[in-house]
Amino acid sequence: MGTQANGVPTGARHEVGVDELFFSTTDARGIIDQANSVFVRLSRFSRDELVGAPHNIIRHPVMPGGAFLLMWDTLQAGEPFCAYVENLAADGSTYSVFATITPLGDDYLSVRARPFVGALRDAALSLYGAVRPMELELRDKGWNPHEAAVVGAEKLGELLVGAGIPSYEEFIWKALPAEVEARLEQASGIAKRPLATGELADMLGVAVRVDEALQEWVRSLDDLQRVADALLAAAPHFSETMEANAHVADQINENDAEGFFSSAMVYLRVWAQMAPEVAGIVSDLLIQLAELRRSCAHTRFRIALAVLHNWTVGQFVVEIIDNVPGSEEARPAIGQLGQALDEGLAQTTEETKRNAALAAAAAERISTLRELLDLPQTMIREWLSRADRSSATFEGMVDSISAQVDRTQADIDLLGSLADECRRIAVPLDTAVVDEQTERLRAMLEAHQSGHRPRYALAK
Image (cartoon, rainbow, N blue to C red; front, side, top):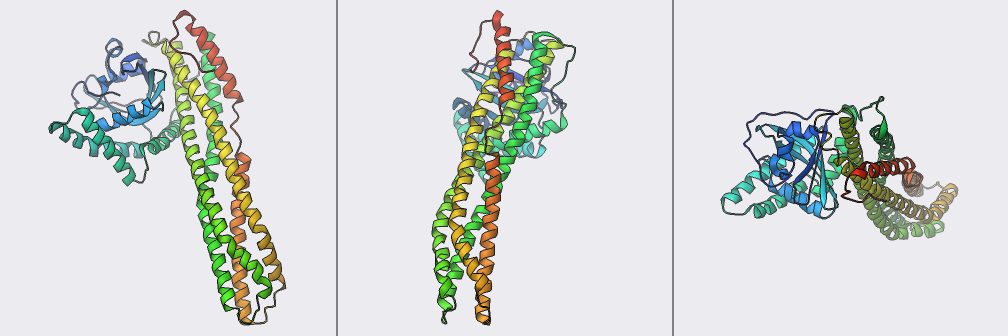
């Protein structure tokens, strides 16, 4: 992804295959260093034309500069970036991709795939269609490309907020996992080559086993995020219940002229006085839960990126095993693919530990709430069991108290069950299989590079 298109669109289109993944590596300036055979074929440039050329050789004029400015800002902050992109082939035809770009030291790895989630792709292209004409108008007025791109990036942000998405970051956290999930349903997965032998067969076996482990990670994290979402939905209702408790207690205190409730008022007052304290605890809990949900979303994004990189490793190894034309020339890129996977898995493992700590802290805060309310709830229930309901007025007030006690208990039970589930799954993901397989991958990559000058150090 660069800054200027070559060629003129003809209106023709071609598609990335359902099972195809393609990649390129570039230096810090965006100059292509390696490209696999799928990229060469889809771009309709020769390999010699691609390697050594700026990546903007495939830039389509419909793409706004603001999108690329967002990309570079994200990459230079050390974070991966994703986008739906229209690319322009050498013959003027267009092909759509979902692109991920990952920093690798001073270099970058871009992996592209067929877009599977049509609604998200269409939404992204709609935003581009609103922003690009504005940038071109500014260019016509004498603004330079960077100045127009800055305005374009700001406009993209405004349009996302208007669509209910707080930031582009949140958009890609949603888009990449959705694309990976859709690909799981429609594509064939990592190809098998049971007759292959040697280091490439071993690498392919590692990719298959890592893929299986990562799918377990996805399921575990989805469970945690589901509970976090349910807690976020339930917690505000708890504050509302406590406010209603205080209102009922105040009403009874004001209308109990005959002193029917004198023996219960001490408990009712405690019940009512807890409302502000509980509201404070719930407010803190909501902050914790929002942080947990955001952390889970980012980790889910990281896992999806690891899945994609692992699939790319597997596919490229198969290309080399099958002796696909051009695969041998791009063979050194297998090291960078392995590096991206290795570093991404290490970061994801650390994030899962943080998720577990956040979930445990939220569960502990809910336990504090339950303990606070346990005594007054118990005492009021005991009083209700002995209350004399002979007076109709008295009975109506008792019914109000009883209804609020039941409502409070229902909220306590819901929060408690969610907290128990949160605590149950608030453990770091089981990384044993991934750790074992990535250690094997490191050893194989180091052996693979023994005849080449290493361009990086693998994560340890």
